[in-house]
Length: 89
Image 1 (cartoon, rainbow, N blue to C red):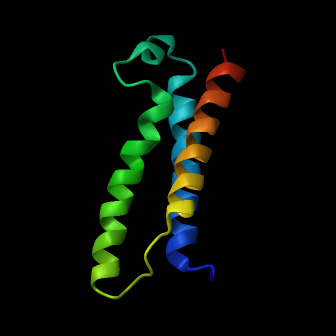
Image 2 (cartoon, rainbow, N blue to C red):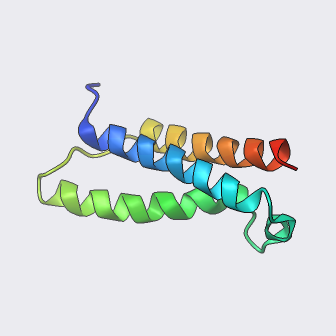
């Protein structure tokens, strides 16, 4: 499968989102006990990004993402969040 711009965009944004979420949550322990735990917050970012990319795919401006792309992006971002939460605790 060729490496497309939409794949790089998605993976880059997801990994940066994991870093940002981790840096926000790490110094604030009360956020760790939120109703939706911070390791799952990248799912929300993925949903928003997926909607944006979906519109671009429908207009023929981007290639669709595979499930592997989504898996790597969400799991990678979640692992970054967890690693930062425990590294900075």
